[in-house]
Image 1 (cartoon, rainbow, N blue to C red):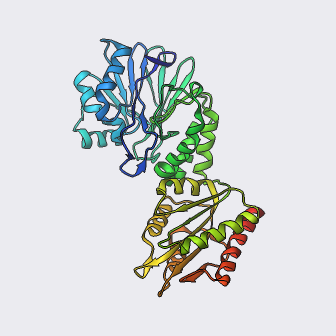
Image 2 (cartoon, one colour; image 1 turned 45 degrees about the vertical axis):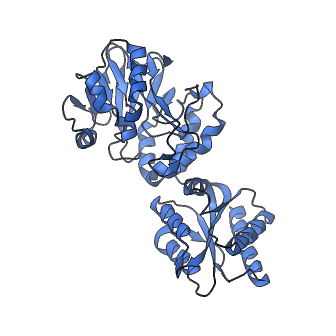
Length: 396
């Protein structure tokens, strides 16, 4: 039995078997599916877990409640890793009332065919549990249209935030941040945000405005640690990321078939370093999963991309990465680019077209196009691009 604070219990589970979250994002350290029980005059469950873990989940609930019934189930987010246990849960607790909003119930009907015993809430409305109450905040598109957050007002206030403020990574014994070494959390939180929530900066800002001025001692997300010691840091990170604010630094990512384009990237990186840029992240787009590249693009102001021409077009993995960047509506970045070819140069023009039509980043320096191999002249052009990006970054 894991009590977080004043009759709020953790009943979530860990998944260390899944290799890709949503079938897309690597989980080298697993992921948690967090669910919470509030025991008052009425008993309220906050979210469920992925259906594959239902046996462990129901055991966790019984450990806290014994034979006592659950009165309410609050669904903050209908994504199946949080609502997947709903249909089975109703077999154990057939009279349970599901609390959500209109869009919650539309999805619940579609996913599970459940339409009865619902209680619709609107923004700012409250629900009494007896000694304490819940208040609901609609936070659409953080990161689905039905998402909401729930505030528990007890001796210590707790924000149940759905996927907001979440992180990749299973919980290895400790649940609350003050119980664990959180060094691993911060970059996994940025990777989680940039890949899962990152497109929705404006909705995140709207959610933060709704929560402004409200004190909460704990943030209970559906993934990652329960935040207590680092509540202010976590909220500040979400504020910064959703404003697309960056740290000084440079991401250089490239595609390469036989190493020639990679040599261009090395020249650019060395020149930028010599010019004073200390934070430089370099990635081969065919080797490193794009979720890590996107994480660092969210972090750093500067971006330089390069790739060879392939089948008279842009190298496939670079084309995919640029599409992923554009899909997230990332703002406030600088960009430079380069490319190579053997007999028909298309890559440099294609990257330029991506930026003009979709990315809309601020161009820095002259694009470098290399035919076949690195000559002294092209070497100097690459170094110039690195220096010009460094000068722009350091001026800021």
